Length: 547
Image (cartoon, rainbow, N blue to C red; front, side, top):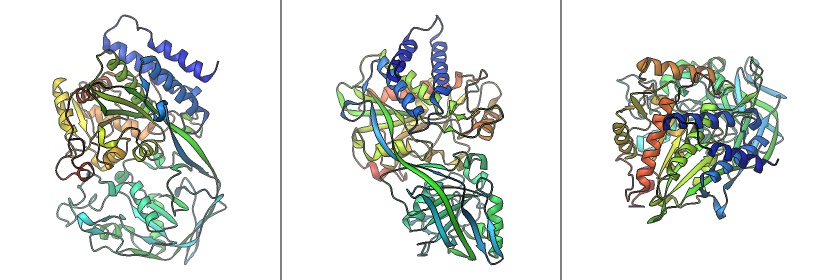
């Protein structure tokens, strides 16, 4: 049987009527079936550019076809090709800091985590000097420039994670300039690497801080030296990555500097880059590299009276593929919650729409590739949209839903950004629920999912993700919601144990799926255009388009 025949056969099975049960029970059963299917070893952890991708894409096409949707990709196809550079570092031939007291070796995975996005056989840094650039922020609108004209060409830029006011006390001048505990895009590691490359650095290193980034060292190292980047992007960085917290302290001490004091100094707009005197990075690490073609899967429900306008719903199909075996011998990091559950939700929402009269606006369902590698599939689409972004009404994204039962509230990510939060509030009220602003804004989740490439270009967005704050669960309250987050992020996030389990209770996930389904359908049957709120950094990109 070919993969195509296999996918169509599976789709037929999933389209059969479920045994007599309530609609919610039927939905939970179908969602569970989809999650268990996508996390089966047959799909090899769903890494881009692998046999696992081929099988995943074929399966998703079959499911969308079986629902009666049309191909939504370019040229009437089901897929949009996404060219990616795929690299993986090997065992270092040389990796150390030169110091005035002799070499300081670096152990990959323990002292540092590194990857490359260059197509070189050896990722090489030759005795490059290090420059500490604080948080590495240049934000004219906030009166902030950590670089002060420093020349980074051929050098290694060393950063702190998060924003200048993340750790600031309430009376410090910087307090609140960058949203306080709420991370801005300047706090994201992706921004810091981009900024280092723009300035010609040969490498970029971020000192890890679990509180500042929102996850532990085990999550940082989970890609295992592997990386993906858009072929269309070029970078000056031979190496990019992280130093462990302890190695950061040790490195600065070797330069006669106190990193603790520099953390405080970096919270001032007067901060200037600091050269780590007598310190240089020397590296030669073999690298395998290839250009692969991955795929976004796109399906479309045509509109009627406003057919050229689009409401987009999305989730990412990719996970982390194969890695080191865990204690149980499992090697596939198949992302049951992140984001097979989101894909299952997308299919269930589409099923519900197909039972209704045709919407006024078109609805596009997107299953994105390479989210885990830096939102690459959605970024490629946003650079090369199949449907004009000025005609895209909104993007609604599902990525990680809690599996601990019904909740009295829904957590809002990105408070104050757009009127999509008002849509969420109205839909939640109809469910008898309230809206709680994210309680973990320092994790910067607004910048960490596939809606963000659309937000950057002015399309209003809504992210449904359960990692931004503890849900107020009907059983156990907010303490139980926090316990779920702590267990998932501390134990299974990006690990082999992100797997379906008999303990899953999808009642709360079904509440959130119903919210997305309702908001998407309401927008698809109105002339309403969501708007950015005053002060949002994305409002200018939208302008008056679409209104």
